[in-house]
Every structure is written in structure tokens, then in C-alpha cells.
Length: 309
Image 1 (tube, helix red, strand yellow):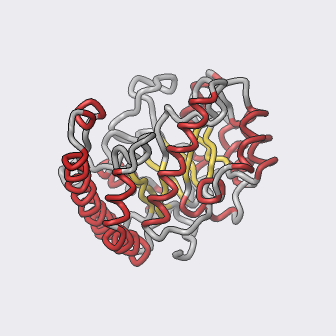
Image 2: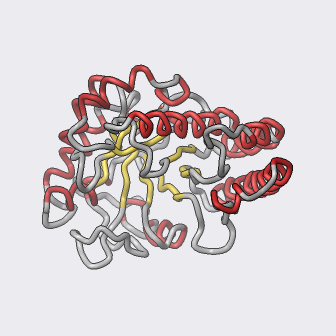
């Protein structure tokens, strides 16, 4: 693991580039199911090999631009968590050396790696089959991170939203029983509808799970005027207290296209909240990807000028 960053926040790239450099391949479930067992293995071997090479390229892309935080796509290895079909696991085991070398490329470049799996993962669903499939999917993601050689800690986060609304107690109760590869990396993020940071904080405190604060979600959820509302700074600090060590804290940054209440992410970040000026790690959730990061670096926070918080 690389050393934690200094006073200037590190900006993170989410999965893909707006340019052609980082693009991953996939296969649909309907297409996969019509293939014979041999064809399935060949298809996944082709896709997995290609995506590992692209991921290695993502490490080089980030390193060349001084980007020290990268979010893995949760769709790198399609069909890996498919119930009753172990083809993906076999193919990934075959590619273990290549996967480990790719993870080492991130580590060698001092790039922190995390993942934010799909919205359909609902650990605290009322439906047992959804809970079961959610744990299976999270376990598959943890296996990928293990295969990359990434440590089992919040340094290499596996991030989820709170899931089914009104079932915070159920979420808190199940977290201690998650597989170790999932539990030790788990983080929770507030969202726009089901879970505010105030609702997630007791769960995080009870289970030792770090809280990833998203100011945009908070503004939408609480119908606030903008990300300069005093509560944004409050939640930056309260969520920081859930991180051990605090220097590992991650927040999410995005703007609405048509204003603070617009859930859609804008291409660039026009409004950088002053409350984020001393946050060590910031994932930039903007459609402009690396273009948004490059533009943000012109902000006074990243050019070494003092900013009041």
C-alpha cells in the first residue's frame, strides 16, 4: 500500500475514460446462454483476457497523468457470479498470473483502487433470494480484488449504498457475517432517496464501516440550495470520524446538469464545495472523466492557493 496523500486532495477516475483509452468488453446473459459449454469458456477467456489488458492500460493511463485513485468497473468479468455456472471462476483462475501482475502495476504506481458494485446488490432486501445473490455478487467482486493482490481493508474499498429503505437494522445485523474479503473492504454511501448520511452513520459506527459522503446526494435528499450548505461540512467531518485512519477518507464529487437538485451528472465540475478542500481522496463522478479531473486541477485548492473552509 502506498503512503497516504498530503494536504492537496487526490482526484479519482471512475472506471472509463471519455477518450478511447479505457474501454472494457462484455457479453449479455442472453447471448451467453445460447453458447455451448466450450463456446462459453472460449468467449469468457477472450473477454477476460482483453479486459485485463485494458485494466493494465488504465494503470498506465492514470500513472501518466498523476491520478492516484481509480475505480474498477464492476463489469470487468461478466458471468463471474452466475449461479450454477462456474465457467467464469475457472477462466479467471487460469488468468491468475496476468490478473496479479495488473494489480501490481497499480500498486507500483501508487494508485489506490476501489470498486462501487451495481445498484441491484441489496444486502438487506426483504427477499432471501436477493440477499443470497447480493452476497454472491459481492464475494465475486472481492475475489477479483484478491486476485489483483489488493489488501483486505478500506484502502481498497468495496462501496455500496444502504440498499432497501427502512431496513437499516437488518443491514447492521448482517455486516459482521459477510465473507471476510467483503467485510474488511466494505464502505457505505448515502443516496438521494433511501439513506441519508444521518441514517447510515449509526450503522457505520456500530459495524466499523466507513461512510463515503456524497454532497450531491445529500443536497438532493434534503432539498438543500447547494453544496455550500453548512451541513455539507458537518457531514464531511462526521463521516471522516468513521475512517481508520482518517487520512483514508473518500468522498464523492458531482454536480447536477441543470442545478443542485438535478440528479444527472454534469460533464465537468463547475461547483467545487469548499467543505471538500481538506478531504484527502475525492472520486470525481462527472461525465467528462479525465477532462473533468484536468479542469478541476485549475481550481485554487489544487493549485496550492488557500481556501477557506
